[in-house]
Length: 269
Image (cartoon, rainbow, N blue to C red):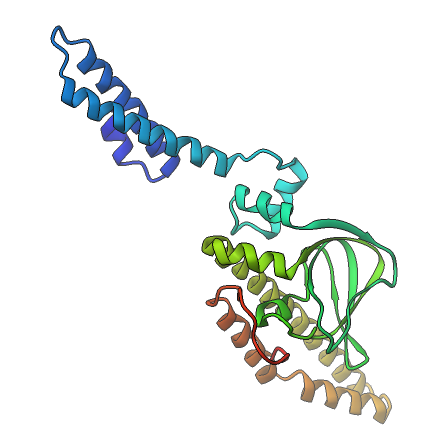
């Protein structure tokens, strides 16, 4: 019954556990014969050993040491794609830092060898001298350049807006680990791209609200300057521009984080 139950389990941990129980009972059955059935006994013992080893490995993946309650909340909220063990490994590669107001994380069109994750606080993203977005808890900084490859320039200038807490990783160290762990590389790439898509959606919704507000001011007979601003918003933030940016992000979701270098800095859509 234990063996049969194990084979119908959809959860791999439960499956291994039931197989260990079943083959252990089967080993005892063979062993307690008046004349022990040696060949079946040995095979059953081998199956017990193999499934026990896999059970321990799965337990270490699901309940690794070194993962605090706050870290588990962070993983569930923003790194759900990663297993607890993968998340512990990712945290071990990084360093938690506290940055003061005005600290510069990246500079537009200049390479940065770090990848940041905003754990607490907010940061301002500026492009061509204008603030275009605010990054809060769960946002990545310099993720586009990281996915483009070694030597890529930062998309914009990111400055701490007040005191913030970040997790910082050296890109070279991450690429070295990702080169030997394809699954971790794929899961982190998925997390980065999902974050980018979410940022695009938030920015698009915010710009749509600004367009509606500008249109309302124009309707109420405000100055020609407001009408010009409304026209610029509609031109710069059209649905086509957003759609192309979103499609580009989704395309990157199907590509693992690069482990080598790539020529050219490039900029996201």
